[in-house]
Image 1 (cartoon, rainbow, N blue to C red):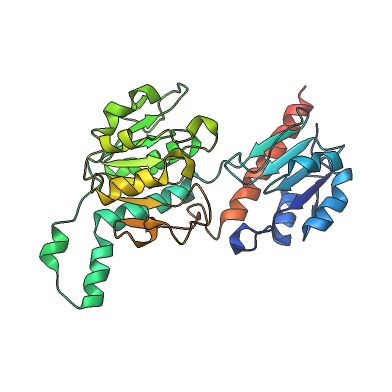
Image 2 (cartoon, rainbow, N blue to C red; image 1 turned 90 degrees about the vertical axis):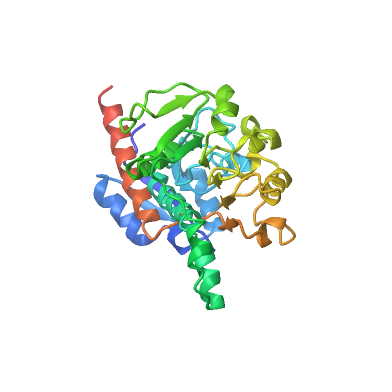
Length: 319
């Protein structure tokens, strides 16, 4: 299928401005894909009214019952990295998810790592109390150099996080269900292991990054027992999905000081309940599922999308 005619776009987000598709993004696509015409829908009614004629759409989500309104639909593009928002029940429809999130998420993780390792949260307390707490803060300082980083979920995003961390002198261990080649930034000390080997590697982990997708296969995969395998100085960073552990298990290991702290950007239920114990924990840094947010988000997506469409068209022409 050649994608060189009309493409229907419905990408609106009421909370994060950077996640909205603007007319400038449409012009960029038309300029960079010869013959393409971009139609932008401003609301769901307009989108659903135009859906019956659409062959190619760009959306955040697609409800299963919408397929009945889309007899001509052949291709769905989405900026989302996760596959949670589009329930595909038509084998003839292809879905292409965004793969550009890695650098933005890696920046968020690095920021959170330094928040903990450089004790910025304690410095802020010192500032508010107007106390020169050099001794107490110096005792809490750490370094990325030589840190053993385990990345559970070593896919596109996990590998990008490892690439960003490697120049700081970290030792990277990726955990992945299916075997892959070592990334080009790996050194002799770095490795990729199977999920079956996770218990042993957790015991020597300084920083644990969770980059797992949601779904049945990852549901509560990180048990209380596995969390207890982590050293007490270990920090946990979750930018994947909140279903990978029970919240009460994470709260328990944090309260019991079995791990040093956690940066959490995702939760099993969002927004996070006001009743959650996580809100009031000093050793937890919470973000509202925005580790991939940046002013360049949509521009990065349309650049990737333009290349995907050109490559698809080129591939079809060569057949």
